[in-house]
Image (cartoon, rainbow, N blue to C red; front, top):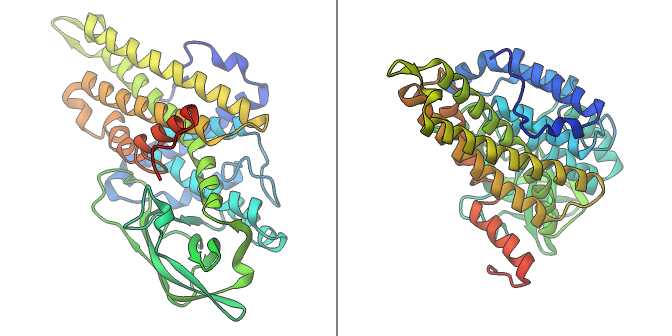
Length: 388
C-alpha cells in the first residue's frame, strides 16, 4: 500500500498548516518505508523493532510536544497527527511513543527538578534512553487509588517495595516512572535499571499488542535517592494528569488504525470478485464501507477540535475521555467490519485489519476502560460522580 494517501472525506487537511501537513507526511513516509515492511515479523515474534527507536528520536517523534531540554516542543495538534500516523502502522508503535513522551517525559518536564530534566529529557527525546510508566498493579487497574506499592523514607533515600503489571516498555526501559504510596500520599520516583532489587519480567502469551514490549516491574527493597523523586508530583492527581496526556494521543492514534482498516477493505472490495463482479458493487458491502467512512470522519472532527483546544490551553479530562471512549470503540468496530469484508482473508496476517482488531481490544481497556470514561463524562455533565 505504498500509495496510501490517507482518509480525508471532509478535507480536514485544508484546516492544517503547512508545518502540520509536513509533519504528517514525514511520519507517514517513515511508517510506510521503515515500519510496515517488518511489522508482520515482529507481531509473529512478539517483539518491538528496537532498531527504530533512534530513528523515532531523530525525527522528533518522541515527546514531540514536550517543552524542555532537547525536546521538539511541537504543538498538541502535531503530536496528535503523529500518533494517528504511527498507529496506522500498529498500536504497538504508537504505544511506544505515547509512553515515552506522555507518561515519562511529560511528568519529568512538569513535575521534575531542573537537574532531572537536564539528565533525562535529551536522551529520552533522542531515543538513546527508554522509559516506562509504573502505575497499574495486578489488583488495581481502574482503581489506582488502591495501589499497594509503598515507598518509605530512610535517611536521604526511599525504599520501594511492590510491583506493577501490564507495563509497556517494561523490559526495554532504562528508567521507570514509578508511582508509590508514601506517608504523605502518592509520589513519583525515577527508578533506574540496575538499581539493586529492581527487576522486570516479560508477559508472554499475548494475542494483542504483540509488536510491543509488555511486562511486570518488581521492587524488592529498592533504594532510590531523594534526588530521583519528582518533588512537584504530589498525590494521585499527578499520575492521572499524565494519563490524560496519553489518552489524548490514543484518541488521535486509533483514527489511524481505523483509516488503515477502511483503506484496506475498500481496496480489497474493489479487487475481490464474487458472482462475476467486484464485491464493492454489492449494496451491503457499500453500506459497511460508508458506515466506516462516516464514523472515521466524525472521529477526525473530534480530534482536530480537541487539538485546537489543547493548543489554546483547554485540555480537561472529560473532553479527552469522550474522544478516547468514542474513537477507540469506533476503531474497533471498523476493524471488525473490515475483517468481515475481507472474509477468510481477514483472519490472516497478510492483511492488517485482524492485527488492528486484536490490538484495539487492548487499547479499549488500557488507560481507562470504555466504561470508566463513560462515567468520567457522566460525572462532568451531571455533577454527580457514579464511582468512588
